[in-house]
Length: 247
Ligand code: ADP
Image 1 (cartoon, rainbow, N blue to C red):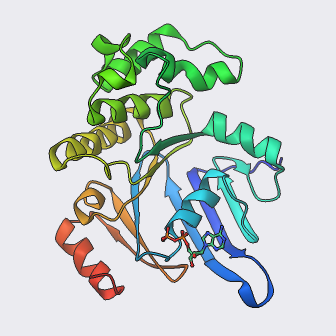
Image 2 (cartoon, rainbow, N blue to C red):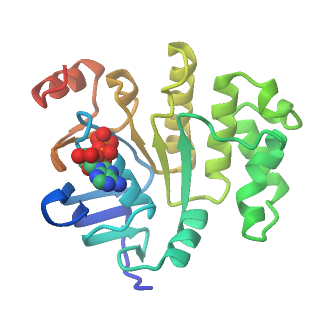
């Protein structure tokens, strides 16, 4: 494992990802270079097929780039074997999905504590309680997912993503299954975690309003970074997306 000093939570340099070979080869990312400062909230947007999922997967160590470098904190992911990548994902990345993906047989508190348990660690009780407080779920710590609303389940998923104090929380359409008001509460929660805990969040979304909660928006088109908008508003995001060919 190569270690390099860095102040970024995530740094990608000239990341290219090609699926398949020969005539059927598809290049999903082309020479993508980007840095995410610690304690920032970044949204990724782009038309369908522009490489958003591939970008998130390469950043999270779910997929290896064909060439280029991915530094998560001070750890180089490129060239790592699957076992090492699995350990990196557990210890350094938090995941939040559209579909929550909680374990139905476990309570709220058990769901949050599960990932460290899988690595053989008990969660510090004070940290578990602080996380449940922050996401507004402390009084429901003993409930099971089926007894919670979608928004509450997503709050538990966010607490679970934070439990290992990850370098980056990767969120894939985290508000996609929520109604507008609940979705906004979840986005405000991400904003608060970034501002108050210094957490770094990277979120893929289709929704310009969701993207406007981020500190900056990275636009992808045809596997390339087509621009970055700081202090986005929903209107400016929509306008950029229109120029990328999205309605
Ligand atoms: P987005 O998330 O923006 O819709 P993706 O990253 O899923 O884009 O896909 C980018 C391109 O790579 C698309 O052309 C897609 O068909 C292709 N692609 C993605 N994953 C694979 C894969 N596992 N095998 C082959 N092609 C893939």
